[in-house]
Amino acid sequence: MKILLMGPPGAGKGSQSEKLVRDFDLTSISTGEMFREANRNNEPLGVEAMKFINKGELVSDEITNEIVRKRLLKPDAERCFLLDGYPRTVEQAKALDEMLDEMKSKLTAVINIVVDKQAILERMVGRRVCKSCGSSYHLSFKPPKVNGQCDRCGGELYQREDDQLESVKNRLEIYESKTKPIIDYYAGRGILRNVNGMQSFSEVYEDIKKALGEVA
Ligand code: AMP
Image (cartoon, rainbow, N blue to C red; front, side):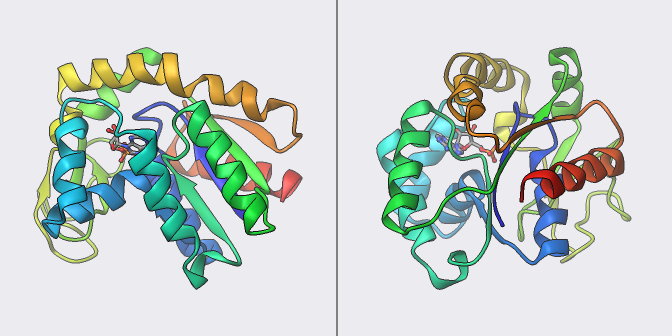
């Protein structure tokens, strides 16, 4: 399975993809997480990327395509992967097609999680992420067992700078203008499925599995 998980910021992509990756033994490729990890390791690319990320802006297509290309070439991405947060522009979608063509591979499913704009702000304000391993939680929808502490590694949970109000608004505008057009890009291929994201975590997850069953 080669899956692309799409949806506006706050649609629950991160949490759903964590579970899909575990249950289906997929290789997770999250560009946002790759940038944050590079920043945690003080790599120049990560530090540079965080300047854009913290303002809620997109990192350039050139930098983003390059890290994805390198990641897709690793052996663990050969059989199956889940892309979360990439592509985010039509240019990136075209670059991904070229990469997959070169690798004689193709996407099996594009899952688009659909949520109300109103709900997004509420969701994002409550999101918390582990400083050590990057796992994500939500104060209302997916709280950690111990307040402020990661269930998986015990690391400290924090609110991402780009989950603060001004950044969130910026990210939503960018999603509408740059990322949403990708849905049309994939629409004619028969592998795109919309999933209602205005349900509980497990209902959304079940719908994603159903959609995958139809196309993958
Ligand atoms: P995410 O963790 O997917 O919400 O991504 C966090 C931030 O990383 C985004 O708001 C962007 O600033 C940056 N980012 C992640 N993926 C991409 C991408 N495909 N293209 C450009 N910027 C990205």
